[in-house]
Length: 268
Ligand code: AMP
Ligand code: MG
Image (cartoon, rainbow, N blue to C red; front, top):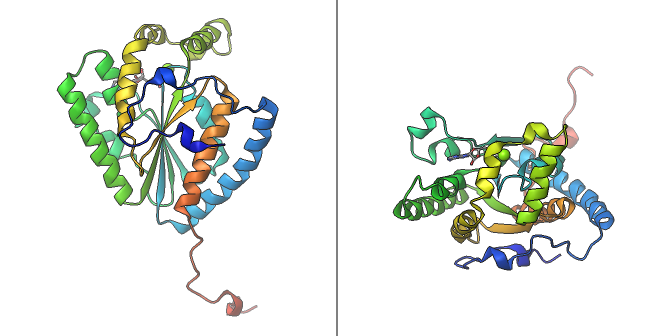
């Protein structure tokens, strides 16, 4: 699969309407799921190395519209990793305490330490998305925040935190079906939120806000636009990008500071 086709180039201006939501890579679901199994083994091994090495971290940012598949991605993709080495952060409406600080304060505190994989289920990008769509911040503030975000991510990359950002791209029809399923299916009803219907009516405004957010794609902190109408394809593609990223990070088991061959148990 050509991952480059899904990566936003630095300085590229994205028109989301030109990006597929229902791509399946020309694969059957069955084939896709078989490929995923193989990837998962490799992902788990690289994560173990990352943890053992303890010298660098990986930060995975998940952004999407409501019912876009962020939670499903955590459940199906992130679950491949050993939970001991993963820190998941769900960013909700800021608390009074959080609002009393700059917008990156709560986010910076959740950046993974060396050796860890950090997952942001929503992120600092909400501060240029939902806030912008609802007119809570003006244009100049959006621009200023985008600049701060670029600088922040560059700071992280310099501190050996690799950043990879996913926008899970679904069509309005797919969102309608998923929200409808949450209404109709008693086992999914707990996920239904009236505010999702209100947010849905701002589809075009969110598109514009996401297109601006995607301009923060850089070589070291890239955005990937993931066609997410097919959940199995979304899982496969994200896993491939993560594998590619972890391979580039190339974590190594630490060299022992002792000679394992001549080390003996005492009194045995
Ligand atoms: P959920 O992810 O469905 O649990 O919903 C979390 C809610 O928190 C969403 O409606 C987000 O838009 C909202 N949210 C997250 N971060 C922010 C933020 N920085 N400012 C305002 N709302 C936010
Ligand atoms: Mg929600």
